Length: 334
Image (cartoon, rainbow, N blue to C red; front, side, top):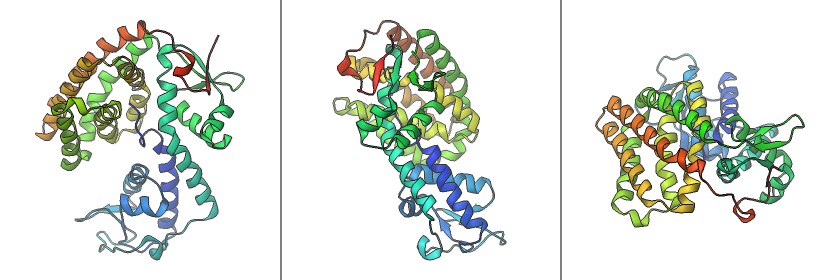
């Protein structure tokens, strides 16, 4: 499971948040200005995920308020300002050179992060690997600074670590560690789903449900990317809406075994297990559609327990990887 935005978005969201907060604190934007995911993403050349996260933080800070339409309103003095829709640049949004440089660097890292995360994390079940930062930069044609940014993000979610000599490495995912991860997930993800439910919105749940139904009805058309999207719908896009940031952080770190699981599924093509997993997802999403989050949480706990029973034996019996099965910026540790 490799979220194209959510894993790498937090640092980019921090930049978007700082830019918008500075403009609001300096009252450079008119009161009542409508800020939404779409116009922020367009003006700052970022995806909607960091824009959404930044807007939520500003709302939590009391700097933006909801209204009857889409988006959030800039608020200074009026309890309920009148909505003002206009081009953000015309409204006063401007970037200094430091903002542009950071956004450019973060956007580049944001773009390549999913590929690096999947490539590295999918090797976790196959032993210990070294990660060469220079080779990573050369592989993607990026600077060492951007490569360092990507590796730092991976370090935050527990995919890579650094030894005493500041060398990057991938720690093996053993069956024992996988069991620990799944135990944490079975405890936390159902609770996070309950906390996230008020933030989901009917349209978001229905979109995930419809995508899942379409895949179940036409299994022959489901490829690895499609299955990855289905997993991300539930375990990232919905559950990570949980307002408890510390809970989400622990969940993110414990979701890494999914990478190894999917890598194995893609390599060995276990269509029966894929089908069972999708039906279990349906048992979670359907109660959400029916506005029964408690039953959805119970179904999610069962799904994670079943996933552990399948994944852990696989991890214990995986064959060694050949050199052509991992990227050149990785090398097996002796």
